[in-house]
Length: 538
Ligand code: G6Q
Image (tube, rainbow, N blue to C red; front, side, top):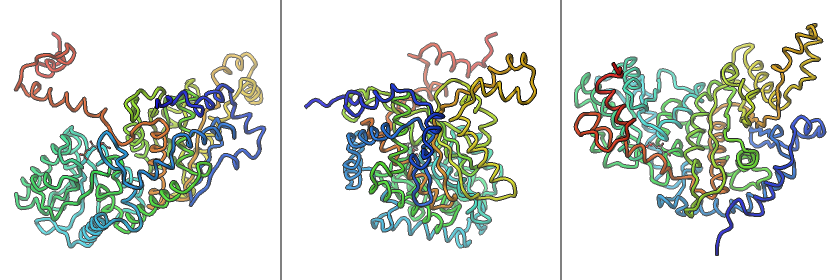
C-alpha cells in the first residue's frame, strides 16, 4: 500500500490550515491572563514556558494529533526493545540504557572500571611513569567524542575536583594540541584517546603527536602510564600501544553524538568525580522515564519537538537560537548544533523518498548576555523569524553579589521584548515624554520600532547540578528523536559527513606532492598550487 506523503496527511494539512491565521503574541497575552499557566509545563525542577510561542490551544491540539500520527509511542517501544531502528547502519539505538538505574551487566562492568580509575587518579594511586600524580587530563577526540564531555565539563565547573584540570583537543590543526601541550608537564599529564572507531584521522593524528611528546620526554615505557583509551574498537586500541587493561569499552548501539553517557564521559567523570557522574546519569534516566510515560500534552521533550516542527514547517523559520543565560552552559549551543543538525539535517526519509518539507533548523547561539552585545540586533530588528530557546537557572551555580538577579532580568527582558515589540506610536510617545522635539521624533522614531512577535521558549532549571544537566541533555536528545520520527527520517545515521572525508583522503597525497594533480576542478587545483608556490599571483 502506498504511504501518504507526510505533507499530504490530514494531521499535516490541519496544521497548514491553522498556520494561515496570523497570530500576534502581544494580543494573545492581552486577551488571556492565564496564558502562562495554560502554556507552560513544570516537571521535577524543570519549568518549560512556551507561552511566548505563536501557538493557541487549537494549534497544540493539532500538533498532538501529529505526534499520534507519527506513532511515537510505538517507536519508543521499538527503540526500548533493542530493534534495529537505525536501519541504514543496521544498529539498535540504546544510549538511554547507559543511564538506567540497574544497567545491563556489560554497562555496569565498564561503569565500575571507570569508577575505580577515577578513584585511582583522584587519590593519587594512579601515577605517571616518573612517580608524579596526575594534574592534567587531555581528552583527544572529535565530534561526538568531544562535544558532549567538553560541554558537560564546562557546565559542571562548580563540581570540579580540586587539583585536576581537564582539557579537550579535537582539531586536526596542530595549533590546538600544541597550545594545550605548551601549558603542561608530561610527568603529570594523562591522555584519554576517545574514539568510537579508533580510526578517525583527526584523533589518530593528535594521539600520535601526543604519544611522541610523552615518549620524547619520558621514554617509550611511559606510554602505559600516560595513555588510556575509550573505544568500541579494542583491537585498534591495542595496536596503538595502549594496554587493554586501560581501555574503556562502549558499543555500536551508542551513536557518537549520544555517547556522553558511556565511557566517552570518562573525562567528565574525572573532572567532577564519579559520584557526580552518576548524578548526571540519574538525571538523564529521570527524563527518560518522564518521556517514555507521559502523554504529549505534559511531555517536555514532545512539547519542545512539536514547537520546533510548528516553527520550521508551518511558520517557515529556518534557524533555532539557543541562548543559555549561564556561562557554564557556554558550549551547549555547539553541542545541540551537532545533536540536531547531524541527526535531522536530512532530506530523505527512512524509505528512501524525499521528506518533502524542511527538517532540522540551523542551530546556533551563545551564552547570554554576551550574545546581546553581538547578534541580538538582528533577532530584534533583522526581519527574520528566529525562534529562541532561552535557558536560565533559578539559583546561580557561582554566586557573587549583584550578578544573578541582573542576569535573570536580562534573560526575561529579552524574551519579553521579542514577544512584545514596540510600535511606532509607543516609540513616539516615549520620545515625547522624554522631551524630544517633534521633528527629531519624526526622524528617529522609525529606527526605534521593534516588530516583536518573535517566538521563544524559556527553560528554567532550579539549579545546574549533575542531575539537572542530565535532565537537560536527555530532554534535547528526545526532542531530536521525536522530530526525526515526525519527519520520518533516521536520526541516528550521518552519511552527510562521509563525502568530504573521502575527498580529503584523495587530496592529501596531492598536497604532499606524492601524486599529480589530475582530475581536479580549477578552484581545487588552484588552491593546491597556491599552497605549494605561495598565494601571490605576481
Ligand atoms: C557522531 C558522529 C561523529 C563522530 C566523530 C568521531 O554522532 O558520528 O561526530 O562522533 O566523527 O568519531 P570517532 O569517535 O569514531 O572518532
